[in-house]
Length: 241
Image 1: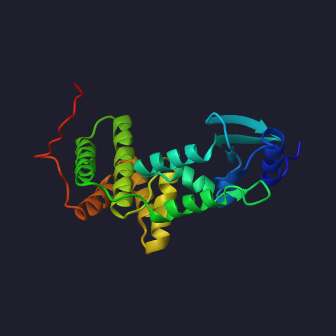
Image 2: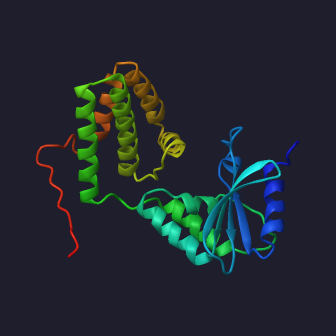
Image 3: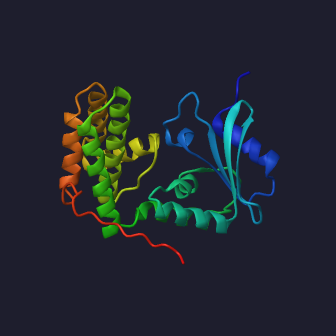
């Protein structure tokens, strides 16, 4: 069966399932231009009143991820995402294609766009210290070697820790999986750097048995914020009574 285009399928789903919606937005890869054969439709639905939930389904041949919200629940998740440095909710709304006629949700969409544009809060001194320590520890593990499986796993940790520290210290949003790579690529595009390709090449070389390029890149990022940190690191825990 030939399926309709993404926007047509999304509009028919909203008309069928949520005729009372104030607004809905089709976001994600199909809108941002990096969809693959397995990409789904990310649809955020804005209702006046609802239980907040996420649902996966298939509609007219498309896999769909539904995110059903009120204004207050969207604002809650925008704030929660900001704390973890990943603008998932704000980006779904601000870059999404409106699916309901009229100006419903316009002010909320502008709020989300402003949140994305503002970027994450700077790392606190404690957060920076912990990220430096964590990446230093991962580099020590990589130098220690081990079985092929262990070295591969540690190399991936070094790759991820380097990317996350790079983005955080650059005042840039972060992500997980493909979104972590996309954020580094966006940083490169904005600043004329080549970190994404260097991280990719360094990881592949490390998995093949030569970690030098990945280690050098991790140290380059660390040197920009004070270098490796292990000896003298101290983290206190707050235990509730």
